[in-house]
Amino acid sequence: MNTLEKYTSVIAIVLVVVILVLVRTLVSGHFRNDAGKWTGPSINQSNLITPEGLNKLPGKSLIVDLSDKGNLLRKYNGSINIPAKSLLDKTNQKMLQTYKGNILLVSEDPALSARLWMLLSQMGYTNLFILSDSSNNEVFKYKFRPDTLTRPEL
Amino acid sequence: MNTRQKISVILLLLGLILAFLPLSGNYSFHGKPDKLLTEALYENTYFTADQVARFAITEDSTIQLIDLRSPEEFRSFSIPGAINIPYGEMLSKDLESFLNRENIRNIFYSNSDYNANYAFVIAKGLGFENNYVMKGGLNEWYRVVMNSEFSGDKITARENAIFETRTRARRLFTEMNSMPDSLKAKYRESKEIERKKLDGGCE
Image (cartoon, rainbow over all chains, first blue to last red; front, side, top):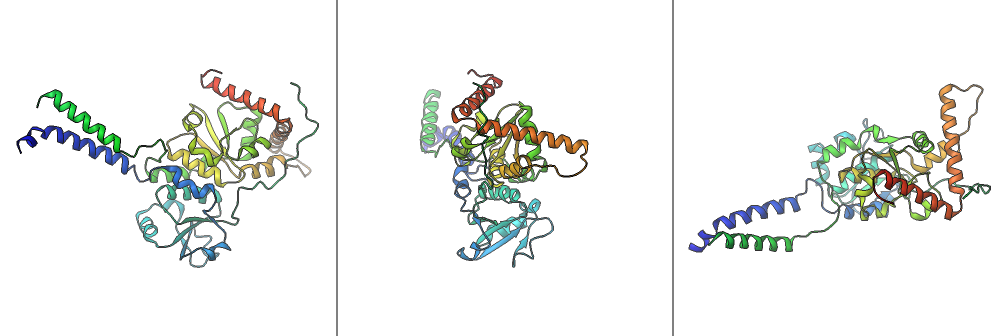
């Protein structure tokens, strides 16, 4: 007991440091550690689901229309509208976080779906997809024809 | 227990804590998701293909075009002045040297909209500023700039200016990308040297 009293100041300092380090390490804001890990599905494009591929997804799915006025609600049965700007509202977040199934983001603007997919993904959402017209959107649709007469001088 | 012993014990314990911490050099997002969402929704974070065409022909030194396609695709053709950071390898690069350049606007592009916008959010989430996306990617560039045609009787001054920019950008794109590979590599190398000089580094 006597020894413990001697070390009180040391233990107090170490405890404070430990707590600070653990908070900094484990609770890095609202985002998960190691951004690279969460970008994986976007690199191999496994996060893109076509309307045809929707039925092949295991489990139930929730389609989230990100438009302001629910423009796509009619197109996708059972979809819900969460305007992009309200995506992180407490109610919406609670609903999405507790949903036991696949969440599919859909928008008329692919840029918007991509941005929000990455944001949610880095927050730790798994089973998160983008409902897209094509399963590979990064295809160049044209053919570049080089000018065979071009021979610039050295 | 004297002061020296106390300090020794503290250092020893701190050393033990550091030894067991899961430290890695991996990137992680920081900041608040709300802030990142607001930034992701800014309409002014996009440039059109026409705007990028103007930057390319004027060799605007405040712009850095970042081509996110594979090295093979990049070697085949790219927008003049662009550098290549394949999207899949983005987080294994030293992003600080590419994205954190004072007064330089980074414009991401890929073939379409997806990879460029993923990259935009990654760059923002990691705390880099001045990031933009060329809306529609190279497909849009090709549709607007490379395949542009004027059909009609009258042309306004504004339309004429846009058409002129597109024509010059198309010529530059075609000439640069028609060069033999060795010359293309030299051209890109010279651009890289210029970039380093502008950053105040050595060749």
